[in-house]
Image (cartoon, rainbow, N blue to C red; front, top):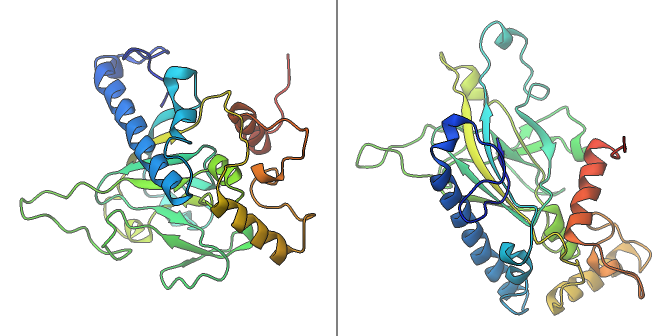
Length: 285
């Protein structure tokens, strides 16, 4: 279930009755997600040594519509006879992908693992799972524990009160922020699988999660970020890759590849280009 932006606490789309009675709570939660993203964006700006509000002012929904989406996700379990033909690298809950926007917030329930990330080439990962998939020309996926101090595959531990501690929010960098920073901040390729331990459990569990995809305002021009940190990274990359002609970082070469006299992509245009790359060009009726 996708929720677009709320306006004055009201959804701008019809809601099913089961959710309509919780409209105010959902709107409040979406607002908290936006505020959380703004705090993260300010920290990223500080790390890039640019004004703290460089990103947040360009994500302000009060100044115009954004592509931000709140999504409720449900992944059903598999049960016999499906388990008899189950293949770990083929039967996945969500295939390999990266998110399109700036940053993503993922909320998970305790005891429901399944998220895996594709580490950069050459990364030493003892917990990697082997895959016959050709996704990104890699065969190693790293499981991401729901609790950060928990070993992959280990059982969840209860708190002293007898209840599970609330899992932390997982933050992903998206394609747009990677493009905007010329690949210095890298978008995370990830997937959701059926955990192997779950397949041996007598009662496999469904998986529930909530995701908030943070996007800038649609009209935001993705001009090069005025960061010497980004500029230094770009110069280093050009030297390693052989000069100005190699602009493979990000989708479309990165914002820093903008030629003089050319207009920068807007956030909306970047989103449409990623959707077209994923689902194909949209045909007019």
